[in-house]
Image (tube, rainbow over all chains, first blue to last red; front, side, top):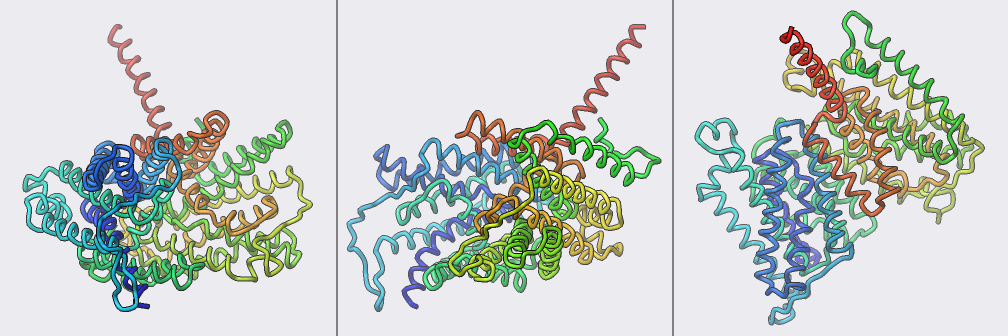
Length: 288
Length: 334
């Protein structure tokens, strides 16, 4: 029991990282980015490529991978989403799904379809025992790093001018524009932040478990599930939701592997029907 | 272009009658195809009919009401399993299982009416969750898994010939499109369009939104059920992997949006266009097949969010404008 909780929490940190960007884009631009999972996988594979092929140290590789993912997200926003985000939500859904397909196909051609993993040597002891459970040291490091980057994101959103602009746009677009905030630029910056954190999640995940281009859709769905559990428009909600979802999915896969997706989605249906605003959501679900 | 009637009916005529007349004429022409096409093309066109039928049914809830259902494949799957189990386990004739499949899909849709508390994206995800839950149940339950306890699907032997299947699916396609025409030109259709434009406003002027949304969901669920039941003997082997595929749902959505969501003719154009593109891509650029698909989807939504219907319309108005400009210029010369 406690081993499931511990492993779930450790994995949950990465789910939370992936969900931050998803939640931010949903709250600020008001769209569901079906290409988000493709960004996560892109970040992971870019990190792996930079570390293995270009021989960069891991820190440089993951920074490069995250920034490349952010730039890709900005390109997607400027070239595609900026034209459609005011239309019906269905349009952006299908459009970003198409974008995800294109990224995945190009990625499969460039990188190949096989699953890739990046093994790191940290020089730490292999792990510790918490009670009966063996906890690998590297998973703990990744978990702590994800918490630190979450705190950093909270500070950026809460304390800086840029964060204030983003929150203003998410509260009321027209008032934000009347106060001299450039909507298009703010949206692009939001997408950049979203992409960077998606890339970080991918770059960390690829050191624990293999990634391949075809996995993009399950990352999108997982991010959405985290948001549903945690609540829309709340970064703390995304963090709590990510950790809970980690425990839930790990527990479901551990105790009932054959029906694991049905359990996860069953819990999700209950959440959607009885508590659509999530655990820590800001008010009722949006009008869209 | 006659089909422009479908979204711009001429004033002073009854749109339902005109559209149904056009539909009958189009079906009559299509019915001649098996006389001079070989088996490969007939088989392919049956798939096109199926896809257009599914997309048209999805269009009622996704296009007209603006509630994108991402789990609509579940109704097709339920229909296909009803067909397979009815034919193999109980030796029922095909028309009976088609009715059963439709009824079952409608009942399941009615059972899940509470998810209409959700809006837009939340609704999309609820329906996706619904589909995954049903998929797992059908795979684990021994009654639906196969005839013997270790089976993982249903093998169906059928006496129906390919040409008969062609006319069955042609008739079903006609029925689906006729349903869409009747629904759209009725009170339900107007209510749905009002709901899509602004649901709160629609509710405030006395439209019972939950009732109409549930009704639309049931209508758009019944037809995939019927199509699924008819498709089961055509497929010859029905399993969870083949009929609960996520790509079936995605195809409904892509075809509708590509052609033009919320128009009668949209899914038809989208289905034909994507099938042609599919054929060319499979034949000539196999490894780029999915890439071409993705690029086209992104391009049409980014440039013409209304789909091919809007593209054709804008080409038409541009041609009119050019003609008018030529007339103007010649008048000025005079």
